[in-house]
Length: 465
Image 1 (cartoon, rainbow, N blue to C red):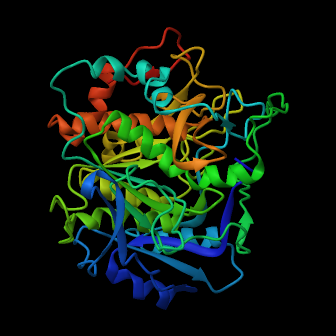
Image 2 (cartoon, rainbow, N blue to C red):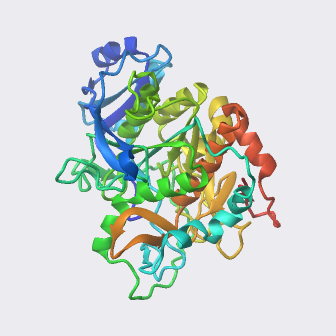
């Protein structure tokens, strides 16, 4: 993670019934912005003749949203009044409206324990598919033992939607990614620029900074340490790395990668909320894969959210509008696996949102179906990794070998760390559980039953398949 957290100056995110939108503009000093464009094309992977290739598939217009969907819109504050004050006033005037600042959302992968510096990945030029598939992380979650079972569920009939970064499209108009990595690739048309001038630092007088000094690990140089240019490429393939873990654990699941985050692994709260809802709406579209004739998105649906919004105190929900959207999807029986964050620097920190919604139980639905995931230490599998925020569950997140989905810096594989990748492993386990016929409401309870108990009070429950 680089620098402090930001917000979009003068912007609010509001989740409310559609009928309230006009009245909010009429009686308050805010103006509703038009919804951004949605994707008109997705890319599906096909294997005619034994070789994987991409094929563009046009999308019909999305049908009218289900009646249980709230309207989620971005508003601009038209006065000099602080945005937070306007958000509170909107929520007080219309109790059914949830208003909050438009916070910066960040992907959770900016640390590496084995790396000479906590903010860079390690190039592994000699790694291959065998090294990736047999690494200790899969043994620790019980995958290698599980694979020895002759007849076993592998995620069949489950769709995993990964909201993350993507390498974009090449000169041929196709994704710069091996089509064997994911089943569906979506290049989200609305990307927040990296150096957006409307971003301003987030300051909150109600949450004074903690008095503890930050703990920084020693930094050194190594010839295998990724350069700044290489890190830009790795961040662009961050979503593919998460997808590689999901596919390794649940090879039968349908994996959809939505390229939402920019090159700095960031977006805005509104964009995240919009994509969450759009992905669920895909299940209602009459669009089918050209080979299997199966829908692109089917239920049960599991989201992988290796990203987060800062949440400094257990009782403080920074982004109420995002909570409303996540609760909405959880009540529709979607399961959301979210990374807890990489902000601890050696001392425990609370979960980021949306992982915090499940950790603290902000609503009944989110308590049941939002699964917060921390990273475990490579040296002590029942302890938190030094960088990991707290969470109910954890999975290996230090020094993993990851498949980039393309050759970068001379190799398709890289060694990196973060709760992003721990979340990817747990999402794969969730897909396997759902494919057994287990109801979405029972997945979290089953994870508790099978988790490896920590040996110390300050340890963490490690997910086991």
